[in-house]
Length: 347
Ligand code: DAH
Image 1: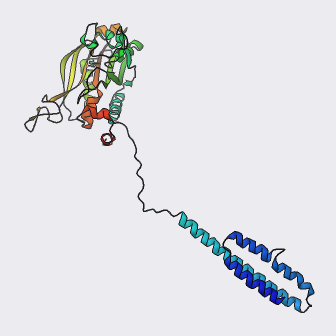
Image 2 (image 1 turned 90 degrees about the vertical axis):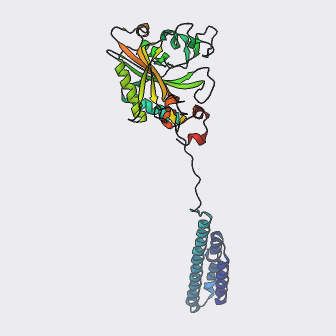
Image 3 (image 1 turned 30 degrees about the horizontal axis):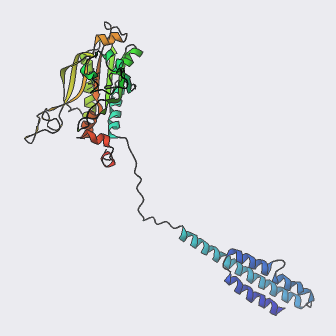
C-alpha cells in the first residue's frame, strides 16, 4: 500500500506538471482526489490493515494528498499567471503610434461674416427676418416703385418662371421691405439676409446667385442721420475703428433721397495706386462700393398702409459677398462658391 501511495504521488506530480490548462488541472484533481479518485480508492483498503499500520498509512496518505494539493495550487497560479501574460501581450497598445487626425468642419467664411453682421444689428435692436426666394414681380418691382419697362425688369437680367413675368427669382432682398411693412406697423427695425439671382456671367466679381442683406427702419422722426449712424456702426464694428467710408448721392426708385456707400480701399488707402501701379483691388477708384440705401419713398410707405406724414424710414441693401471678401481678404468671388476645402480651411 505504501508503494501504491508513492506511485500515485509520483504519477500525480508528473501529470500535474504537464497539465497545460485549468480544465486539464480540474480533470486531474477529480481523477486523483475526487470521491471516485485514485487516492480514495487506496484509502478504502485501509480496513484491511492492522491497527498498528493504519495510523502510519493514514499519515502517509494525508502527506500524499497535501503534496498533490500543493502541486495543484502551484500549477493553478502558474497557469493563471501565464494566461494573464498572454492576455496582456495580446491587448498591448503601442502608445507611441501617431493618432489619426480627426478633421473638424467649420462654418463657411461667408456664413461667419453673415453671423457677425446679424449680431451687430441684433445688438442695435433689429430683428432678423426671412422671406421667399421665389417672389412675385409685384413685390420685387411694382410695390417698390419699379414700374413696367424699367430696365431691371428686363428678361435679359431676371429669371422669370411664368410667361406673364409675374413670378421670378428675386433680384434683390428689397421685397422684404414690402413684406415687412404689409405685416407690421412702426416701429419697425429689421434685417433680412438671403439669396438673390441675376442673369450675370460668373467672373471675379459677379455670380448669378449672390447674397444681400436688406435693412429697414421705420418710426417717427427717422432721418438720414440715423441711416448714417447705423451703417457707420456696422462698418466700424466689422472692419475696425479705422474704417473710412463715404456716402454718394444716387438714385433708387424706392428711396428718396438715395445714396450709395463706399468704403475706402484697404489696399491703396484711397490713392488708387500701389507701387506706381493701378490698384488691383479697387481698379484705381480708391473706393469700393458696398451698398445702396436711402429714405423710404413716401409712396412705398403709403402703398403698404403706413402713414407717411407720421412716419419716415430708411432702408439699405448690402452685398454680403463683398463684405465677406473685404473682411476675410479674399480677392476672387468665385473662391467663395467653389467650396474647395484647401481654400475654406484657411478661415
Ligand atoms: N436693392 C438694391 C440693389 O440690389 C440695393 C438697395 C438700394 C437697397 C437702396 C435698399 C435701398 O434698401 O434703400 O441694388
